[in-house]
Image (cartoon, rainbow, N blue to C red; front, top):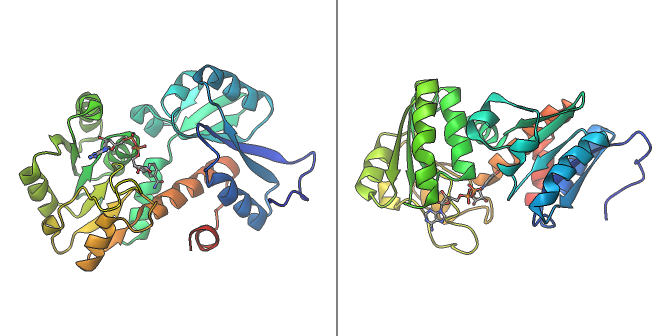
Length: 290
Ligand code: NAD
């Protein structure tokens, strides 16, 4: 049970909207943070089961004076049509995970890519002006390659299996490369020779697919034999905490960057946007993830 004794007529609201939503860790993380920081705000989760109610949900939160909200699956792209403005990164990604309501306007941001890049920096890995290899061009993958290109990574090889995400990505990376000057290539994940060569030239390998989640605990998108000395290895998957990919890299003595840090960092960037405060990342990690 949450502590509600501090709630008054002054208390502000932030929410996460998606479906399903009951499993979301966001209310627990943000409410712990707000209590710790003394911010008079509550964070709640709302299940919008039917897409036709999304517009009313956004307009309703705005009308009720919510500070903002997170948007999660399956609405990260569908929500765009109901927003008044987008941050540059959200506009290029075509996806929003954080909304702030300001002077009657709904403004969309995307903190997934920025959260990933912060987590990489915080792990002591410098990718600016260097090459990275990324597997996965879905929501998380496109947020990462977009932010990485905007931040000044010089070259990104994006691998994906030949599914709908592959087709969607072709044009996106051409315009992103034009806009940022980052050298970008989209390659079929079946081309394992190309993957080995790419990883050998990269400072960082990133898994942004669903591979490694609890339904595929013994799978990884990178053959451990391709892991070379000096490579850092990052995962977006945070459940389990240590995926096969991270364990393989750990056992070779490489720097590893598990997905939990990205989750915490994107939440912290959200709090900065909403309430201009620094989320106590370590406290949240110790309380909910140890
Ligand atoms: P998505 O559905 O948008 O994309 C799925 C991606 O996985 C696509 O690139 C698809 O081609 C690939 N894929 C799926 N099955 C595959 C397989 N068997 N082999 C190879 N590729 C496969 O999903 P998403 O929102 O991008 O999420 C991807 C992962 O990122 C999930 O594990 C999710 O939990 C994680 N994620 C983590 C954070 C975080 O904060 N750490 C944030 C967002 C997403």
